[in-house]
Image (tube, rainbow, N blue to C red; front, side, top):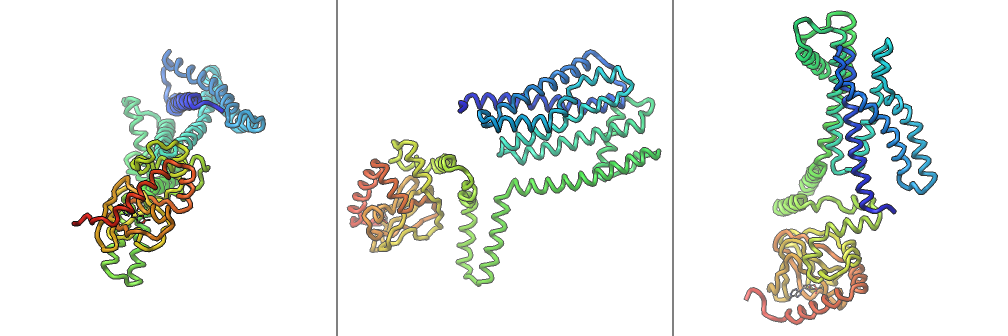
Length: 437
Ligand code: CMP
């Protein structure tokens, strides 16, 4: 197994290398079409850049071989071979074509357009973005938007270069000015706005304009669809909340639920979503392997566990076991969590809010807040609930079912000791004076 530090180091190298390749490919995508439509002076600077990109692309072949060998499970001969085979079959030819010293060849040959071969390396841009989306899931939507914008800009540049090639540069205008005009034409035509101030004159220009308009239509549909999808995904939770509220509202109206009860239900849902309790944890985490799921659960429940003082000395395994068993629940003001005399099937940890413990005379004998636990007596001594516990305001609690409780008690003697002492003390104070006196 690789050490964490090594994995981290490899990841950084991958990112740096991908950024370099992205820069090289983008330079080519911008510079090559420009060079074809305009005789750019071959300065030492441009030669150095072109040569550096060629060297970078040659090194990239070696790096890709290294990555294929390093692939997960590289100690497995079969998976190592398949990664290598995949690279050789799918990408090697492209990488070799892009790494040919084309600048030199085009200078010597009569076909300067040969230099366009280097653009095949653009497929690498897609690979890099896909890889980044995969490894940085939390930024996947943003990366998709950036990828889309990147392609739109490159396509607009290509279309503008094509227009310059056909239309030619008018005399007395600097190339920069003309390029701006060409990119303006490209964007208005691609976006199918078409102001009509710059129009095709020759047949070839007309055919080109038709082609760009058709391309624009396809791109427009693709971009609008993608952005709408991305925006709705960015706020998927809110969308789900609205959908659910509409369903609930329709349900309450069709069943003629009294207004006061309707108000309570909608207040409850508003609070439920605001606190993000609405994210269905189990549906999201169910696909994770058990160990990883336990780690995530432990992270999510860290507040409640650290607030409950007794876990201060518990080892990680115990906390992980416990975190796995805790189920989030939300109670609205006035809700009864457990009722005196009823059998108990769970105990609870208060994460947020205040609850009151009410005795047989309907007097409040204690208040429970963040970090407190309750409902342990019925489970410990197998007896009915000794008091009623009612929420004073909106309360987030975690329930520990009887089965999980028994397992944690058996494996964690310190927890058992503490909880027994607490239960004994509470049993004694029950008969004492209420808080209200
Ligand atoms: P249980 O009897 O299972 O259900 C009601 C719970 O109220 C009880 O467990 C205790 O956790 C809690 N409780 C009872 N008496 C007190 C008290 N005096 N102070 C705090 N909590 C109490």
